[in-house]
Length: 353
Length: 170
Image (cartoon, rainbow over all chains, first blue to last red; front, side, top):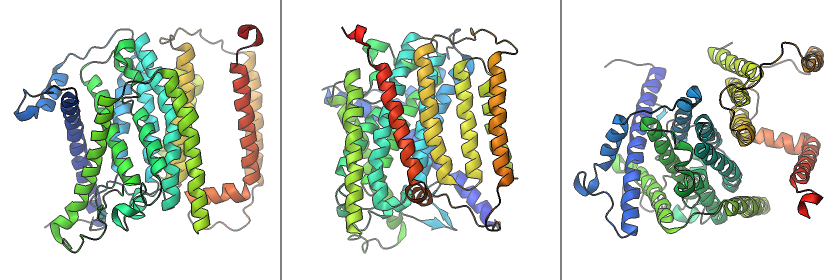
């Protein structure tokens, strides 16, 4: 057995964690696409993909091979460096924010937290900041494509994301006020005392904040019913009209990775993260051992999965907004509501203390 | 000086230099955003995580992206460098130099005349969320309010400019 110094162990474990989380996230992205196609199919009374592998389970693999082997077209009139950089920015920002998410209960091995890549005390701020940089990917792709459809798609998308970012950020302030910290670990701990009763959405009375967050998050990720940037009937394919092969796939992966991040953040902030909905009632059953370490991960994945299912359900159900309705909804309804929510939460907290 | 500081400082200086020298306005804004990321990196190197990521969230994620959006909206068709080459020496550059010299002399004077009240200690500077909040709500509450009024006035001005004029309405 080789003896490693503390820093070497830290480095090794961190690289390992990054690799594992990256593989899991990308696999989850691929299978979210399949899940969406399957569920959408069932909701529209058809089968969805069913030919590749049992129940169509190998469909993501086939899609990946197809995208890899496609010709990578580069139109002559594009602004080359930015055209190449845009999908990289989009995907990188989508994947970086995953690194702040605590996936399970705090389990340290030689002083390294196993279920969170980076435990930083401003974790929530980093997620918001990195997500806001991701907008550059969309804005630049539309501009550098030198195509009117792309430009309109990216203009719509940028305007929408900037507008809803305000409501999104403000809807989280109530949670931050309650936890008194920006660290995701602290926020989870602040609501894990009594199971589902102490989650922010129920016990914390942040149900208004949660719904603002939910709607703003749909708009942030350009998902239905706010998918105007990709309105096929008006804009061909929106900002990624000129992209093909893996560059297109990177935008596609970024969109689904963002969905997963948004679901993770909702779980962490409003649904108690990796804590069990039964609180400490079941603790004596699995006091130690493997199940004790894995059960929180199960709850976390279960909550995130429910969110993704909700995403797909909404897409299958609701029609698209009109552009002025979209802007009016964000600025005139969600933003004032988020401010009232902050005020109410702050007043309640001030009177209680 | 750590390696991290040198890298982030190089990004900050390089980004802002490119923002001043590039011709294409979109490139200028993007370089500026890069420079702001560099400044945020300097904050991080100093151990001020809250300030650093707020810098990214506010300046890179909101201010610069808004400028990019405005440019795309108004000059989205200018992709290649079709912009006229600049003259080597214009009148505006003189006034720019004078302004820059004034700002730098005031900054230099302030830095020169600064005397720390207490001898500097090795204590890490406190710039967490709590410290910033307390400073804004106690020590600097009046400047904060004044800035709020200023921004409100600017917003009202923008709305007035955007409103259709009397002839257009009738």
